Amino acid sequence: MNPVSKADILIAGVGHVLMGDDGLGPAVLKELAAGGLSSRVRLLDAGSAPQDILTQLSGITKLIVIDALTGVAPGAIEAKRFPAICALPGDDRTLSHGLGLIQTLGMARELFPEIDILVIGAGITSAAAPGLQLSDSLRQRIPALIALIHQELRLTVQPR
Image (cartoon, rainbow, N blue to C red):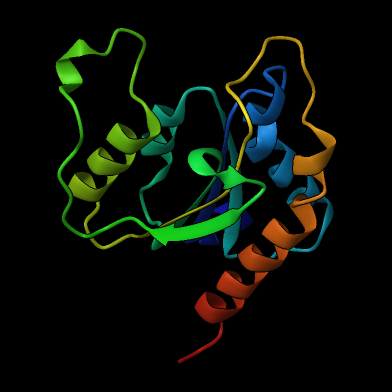
């Protein structure tokens, strides 16, 4: 049996590495991949296409999404459970380039209502700019984000 098939926890990094602080998700995944993770955990770099997460949810009991956050104080770390029942903001029919993260998680909730969904991220100072690397201030937040992810994994992986 392939070890990946045992994974029931998916950690997905969202963002584009060449768009400044938008690359937070992939940067955190890179650091997580360098450390030892349980065989129950699978990593997915969703890049700038969060809808790709939907194709990876079969057999998953917990989804942790790592992303740069707008509307949050710069550098502030937040972890929020995606609600069991939620109303999606806006009119999805106006989207022209795939689904955004909120719409993707709403669809995930509808398709796989049993999955525990947690979004973890840090606030960014401004919108993404092409060609920029992750800011030093956000890069310094990566160890705290990883600690939060490991804390969540310990709660999940340990028998209750």
